[in-house]
Length: 387
Image 1 (cartoon, one colour):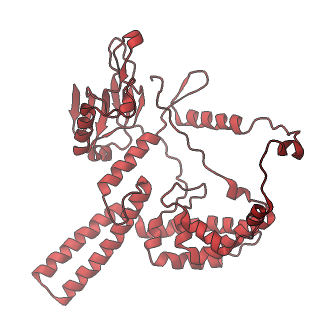
Image 2 (cartoon, helix red, strand yellow):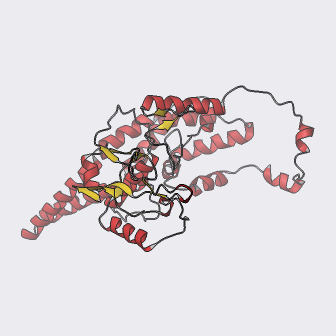
Image 3 (cartoon, one colour):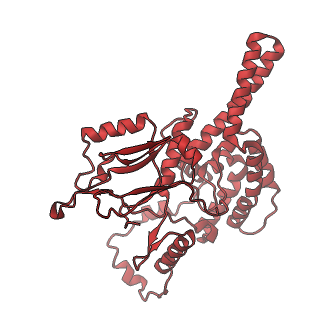
C-alpha cells in the first residue's frame, strides 16, 4: 500500500515503472500494468525522488527461481520539491520482510562548493551583449602564442560575463512572473481607459516581459538538456521536471571502496574518486622500446600519395568556421565553461583570433595544455549494495 503525503507518494505501488526494474524481464517488454502505471504517473506529474540504496526493493525469495522488482518508490511533484529541494530517499535492508523499507530525509544540505563558470546562450539574445564582448575582447592586451592569447582572453572575460548576467538576469524566473503581472495590469488599464499613454505603457511592458520570457525559456532548455523542443516552445514545468530528473539520475550520494566500505560523506567520495583516477591515468610511467619499423608492421594498410596530399592541404578559415558552426548545440560545457553557442554567437568578435590559434596548431603541431583538458563524467551503476 502506498502512502500519500501532500505532493508525494511512497511505499509499495505493486507495479514496476520501467522494464529494467524487473530482474527477469527483457528491456523491450511493456505489459499493460506498466503502461497504465506510467500514464498515471505522467498525468499526476510525479517523478522519483533522488534515492540511494537498493535498486530492487522486493524479492520473492525463491532461490533458483528468484525474482526481484522495484515495487516500492518515493515519488514527489514539483511543489513538494520546491519545499524540500535537498530531500533524499533511502531504501534499506528488508530484514524479515520481502520489501525494502524506504525513508525520506528532508534536509541533506551540506556546504556547497563554488560553482564553476558556465556560459548560458540566453546572453546572446541581449543586443547589448555582443557589443560588450567585442569591446572587451579587443581591449585585452595579451601577448604570446595565438592559442595562449585566446585562452587568456576567454579567462579574463568570465568576470565581465558574470557581471552582465547578474545585472540583467538575476532571479530570472521571479522577474518573469513580475513582468507578466505588470503586463496584465497595463492591459487592464488600457481596456478601462484606452489612451495613447496607456497603450504605450502596455507595449513597453509586453516588450520587457517578452525579453525575459525568451531568456527564461533558453536558460531552462539549456539546463534541462531538452533538445527536441523548438526555441520559443516554452514549457517551464516540463523543463523543471526534466532538470530534476537529470539531477536525480546524476546524483552520487555514496560509493563503495575496494574494501567494500560505504563512503557517504562528500569529502570521502571526492577523495576516493580522485585517488582512483590518479592510479588509473597516472601511476608509473614506462618508456616504450618499440621502433618505427616495428610499429609499421602492425599497420597492413598505408595511405597512398593522393590521400596524403589531401590530408596535408592547408586548413582554410572557411573550413574552421564551418566546423565551429556545425558543432552540436546545447551540449555540456568544457572545462572552461564555454559551449559552442558562445563562439558562434560572437564570431565577429572572437572568430579571427580563434582561427589564427587553430592555424597555429596545424603549423606547429603543438597543442596548448589548456586546450587539451577534458571532464571525466562518472556513470552510476544500476545495482548498488544496500545502505
